[in-house]
Every structure is written in structure tokens, then in C-alpha cells.
Length: 291
Ligand SMILES: [Zn+2]
Image (tube, rainbow, N blue to C red; front, top):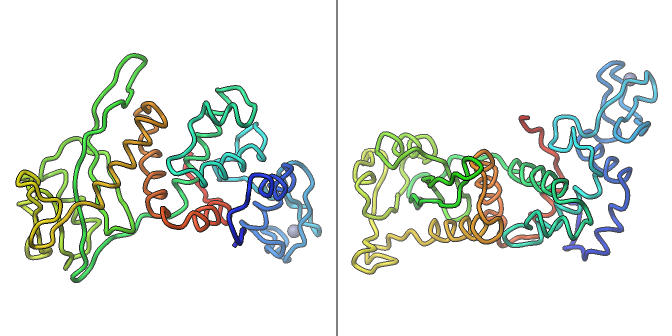
């Protein structure tokens, strides 16, 4: 636990007021002061000797507090990154880069790079889990996302497939809505025995009924919740969230970054009722990411 309650802007700035404090925090979270030295195997102590390196007090071996994280190769101040994470976690749909630029007093391209790293940091906070199980309800659906840029003047529509148990959310960029595309994803990410709710789209009629129970919501007949209890309200809410983020907050995204927007949105949806938990999660781990 880093924070007991959601800090005000002033409280947050006082907690992480310098790069040194931020780097010390990262080292503490990732390694701890008694971290065994990889060279001499003695447990610390470690001292901060440059802006990011901690040295073993016995043999001088150096550890980079930022190595492997999204912040590793950034030349920008880590205080700005921490502030951007804070702003991102306390806002419902994230903070657009132009607002971040004004707020942090940075040029737009720098603010954009920081927003990008922060999004990748948030996207990596929790690893996706297989959902459902005996008798548990899973909702599945697909949606078409507009405003996805694929070149300087090119925009494309992208199909996204989603799965939720109302708590965890999984979303995938898919080439189409065919059974050969969607059913293997369901097999991989939904445990056998689950009760799957979907709309009446043809692909879902081919679900493996030896493995799952299937209920359909008939939107055409005006149902949101069918008489048998079938509903896709929760995955629909996730689509609402995703589209508000992409259309209204970001005014479109580039295809190359779409995956990280989806993963960020999954995390936001997971933490939607626990903003303090979200904030603590974002500051109590610095996941190693693929570059
Ligand atoms: Zn050592």
C-alpha cells in the first residue's frame, strides 16, 4: 500500500517531489533495500549513486531502478511521469496528451511520449486471466471501432471482440467475426462449464455446447435482459467506456497503439469502483515490459 486514501494534487506532489524520490521509490518497490547483490550475493545495503543507478555498498555492482520498465529509456523527468500516472489513475477515461502538456508545462511531443509510456505502464499492471467456470456467467460480444488511423490520411474500422465476467475484461483486435476467429478465442479464455451470454449473431450459435451453456439476448425483440436472464449489458458498458476514451478523449488512435489502449481500458474497467486500489496498483509495481 502506497496511499491510504486518494491524495490531493498537493499531497501527491509533496510525496514525489524530485526525481531522486521517485527513483528511490521504484528501487524500493522493485528490489527492496535488502535485495541480494547479483555479484557478491550479500543483501545490500544499496546506495543511490547517479540519477537511476543504485550501487552495492560491498562490491560496487550497479542496479538500474528503471531497467525493463516503460521509463527506462526516457529522457524526461520521472516526476512528470509519476504525475501523469497519478492524473491518469484519478480520471475516469484518462487524460489526453494536450491536457497533460498544459498541466505539466511540457511541449506536446514530450507530453505525448509520457502519456504513451504511462498507458503502457497501466496496461501491464495485471495479467489477463482465464474467465468463468462451472455455472459462472460470461458475456461475449463484438463491436466495430472507428477513428483508427493506419496512415497519415487513412482511417480504418477495426473489429474488437470482448469477453467479461463483469469484473475482469478481455478485448481482442480480430480480423473478422467468423466462427473460425471468435470460437478459438472463447475456447482459450473461457473455462468449461461457463454460461455464455451473447446476442443472436450466427457465430455464437456454433458454440461448443458440450463445454458451455449458451443463452441469447434478442436485441431485435427489444430485450436488454431476456426473460431467461440472458444479458450483455456489462460488455456493452465496456464498449461504451472504450469508445468514449477513443472518440472523445483521444479523438482517434493510431492502429499501432490500439492494443495498449485496449489493455488500459481493461484495467480501468477492472478498477472502476476502486480508484484508490487503481492508484496503489500503479505505484506499487513497475512491471517489466516488452520494448
Ligand atoms: Zn555486491
